[in-house]
Length: 380
Image (cartoon, rainbow, N blue to C red):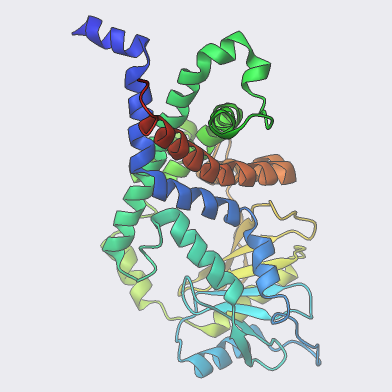
């Protein structure tokens, strides 16, 4: 039996068939994941482009208080507990208020009137859902969303196998003439051209695909994310049961009163700290502490937001614990930066988006070559 398996592997028949079968099964999910991934590389730019005209407002005096803006928003929409408030440093831009995690509105900060829905955020959220769960969560059905997430996870694992098997099948040529094997030759025609592009560009993008897949699995599988934390984060820096609050904590959250005045207080405390920003988000929630996310004035589009907290009861910024070694936050940030290519700045952002779009070429060229082989006329 062992000799039989070795014989198959030696002739690469097993890996070739595995590569072919997986590409057929997961072609559509991988195509959707790849294209949406390329789009999400420019999510900030797309949001700005879609909202280009609607976010602009005319400055007419002083901005209303955060409390009044939220109160007016609640009265206009009937939303008792908005999820997030986003404020721009630019005084000629609208305030953004999230009614929930996915639906956002643009509000004039000088009149508190709703300008309209934030279609930029809505578009990005839709693309994000397609990328993470094939859009099955858009209906609000948690079961469907979970099924979509598992399909994306399985597709990611399949992609890892496709990359490794593809490089292995192409390895003899890589070993023999590396420079030729990774160089696209556009002088070739038809089958030869598609084969050349499939193998050369596949070899060139293999490492990036592995990085994207290995970091992307953290959103599909909790056990994988936990393993990543245990691998890189020391026990003293591990988060303590953040996702599994006990009955006492749950009861405390329920009994806490949601106040717009707390958001106003948090905003004032943050501004008085002297922290410079170009955009800040107040994560609205009941309780004494309100989390704040903000981007520094010179932060590029690939930057990860800074995070802090404000204790509205004590009237001060929450001091960040000084810890040695790698923290869970560092790992999550690095994982996101690597997954998006932002870790390497603008160049990484562009390269990652191009490689994601190449998924369409690999699927098309793979199917083209398979069809050509399948329907190749037999010699007499």
